[in-house]
Every structure is written in C-alpha cells, then in structure tokens.
Length: 173
Image 1: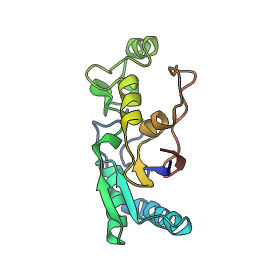
Image 2: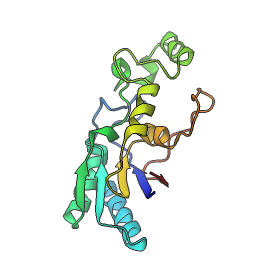
Image 3: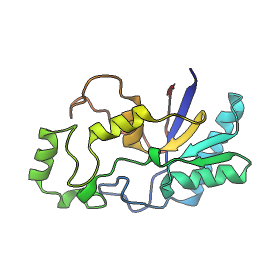
Image 4: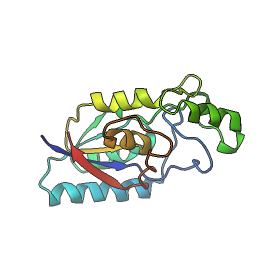
C-alpha cells in the first residue's frame, strides 16, 4: 500500500457565489498555481517522492501541473479526477437555485443528479474505482471528500466541508 497526497486546486477566478463543479472550467491566478506547485515540489523533495504528479484536466488543477512539468515533473492528466458534475446547476449563482431544488437534493442526497449531472453515489463510485498512478495529485474539493469518505451513505449532516483551497490531504491507496 502507498500513500497519496492530494491538494485541492487554488481558488478559481469567478467562483464566488456560484455552484462550480466539473462542468464549469474556471482559471486560477498564475501566481497561486505557481505557489502551490512550489509547495508540491518541496513536499516531494522532503519525502523522497518521485517527480510525478497527476491532475484533473480542469484548468484550476491543470495549471499547477503545467508548472511542475516546467520543473521536470512527469505530469499526467486524468479525467477521473474531475469535480462532480452539478448538471443544470453547474455555473449558476447559488442565489438563483430555487429552494424547492435544494429540497429535492436533500431528500435524495446521494442519488440526486442535479438534472443531468452526477449523483454523489456516482462520484463515490468513481473515487473508489480510481487507481492513483503516483503519490502526488491535484484535484477538487468534492472529489477529495468523496475519496476520503469511509463507509456508509453520507447525509447532509455527515458530509464534510470541502478542504480549503491549496490544502492537502493524505491517505493510503
């Protein structure tokens, strides 16, 4: 068994107040992407890890991979790391999503597919099936929560808050 350290991407531009999932590709400040890439490079050196990283193809994660590639890392892009697709909600301001829609989600927290997107059950299955190709990754808050989830069906009350932007979590794979 190996350990994976996965970082959440830097804060994307234009995400404030919006439902942002895998269907909305937002940029990040290049300085923030470079800063996170530097932290990952330092982590790899400190722990004697191979200079390899895998990222989501979405710009907010891939921007970090591009920096690491410039510094000699082998960079892989894996679509399985994409954030959950919020379907018809993706990219919309939270304030424009009617309460009745939130109620539908809460009534079927794990099965609701956001009218054409991905359910939490589907995301959980995707993360369980994912095979890490290396020890370092850059992904998304919802994906990271799903990857860390251990057993049982989550509820709105038990689902954790997303990790902070540029925060990391480690776990065995």
